Length: 400
Image 1: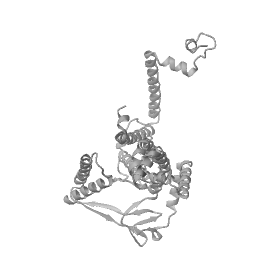
Image 2: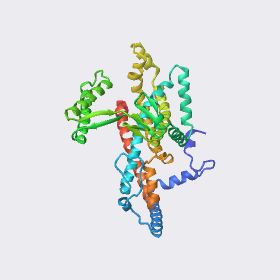
Image 3: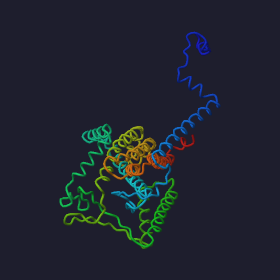
Image 4: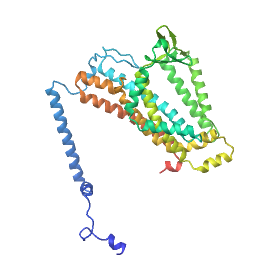
């Protein structure tokens, strides 16, 4: 039978396959605007009905719906906070402490996981079979075991370290103990720190922008620009009278004084998130590098470039166009996975919100705060990564 004749057959002819149930639903909802409005109104009515039932139940239990509880006294302590907090503060400040803790661990987790994952991804393609096999085994283990199990393992490891009196000394500046990890602390002191530090950072950013504009189209190295920007930052701080120094932890008696103390909960959570995310990032980097054609490698070798220069100047800039969108997903996953901190006792946003919900009974409001906070963080991360991805896209792809 001719093809045109087959295409002209309608559903009334025998042998023609009738659309399935999902197709009929899609056809019924699609063409009619009136039908779509009716479905939307039905959904709104359903949510209103459920909301009315929730409010009625809360009134029956003696709970007042709303966020007025945020101004009430919290009456519970938080073991770790980046801002000043005490039990006499409000629930709103307690939730702010949990939010800052979540942002803190997510930021440093993404940063360390990126560095570690890139190193592992490059090592995965090494010609050394021992090294590449080790990285492959690492990736398989950390990608195919539950993250919660990994966090519990790391938490147990850091809690089983020796006491400060027998602390593990790493290069004389780092101490590993069951009370936490002690590292050097950066101390910034001087007049009007909150005013001069942003000014110094802005001056460094302007320096980077100007240098890139002046050197546009020429050969330049990002490392040199970073060094110059750092020099500008230090110079502005010095001119403003801001002093930057490092405080080294010192072991004395039964404890360690000085430096920055990282609690076992924070260290275990950060280590677990970094090792887990680095395994995924390593595979992303490996696939991105392999997406670069072999002709690029051969052309770079023909120009006499060394392997390190080929990877840094030729391969990675092209691979970033493949790596960046997938890295965005990894960053979002790491941020959301930080909510598992409640399992090891780290006071992140979810942990503090759970305590707030248990003491006030405002469970629905606490869940709404958690959802809005994570949505806002992930949207900010997505916007920043999309801006960076748009910057490195090819011009023809950007115009589409």
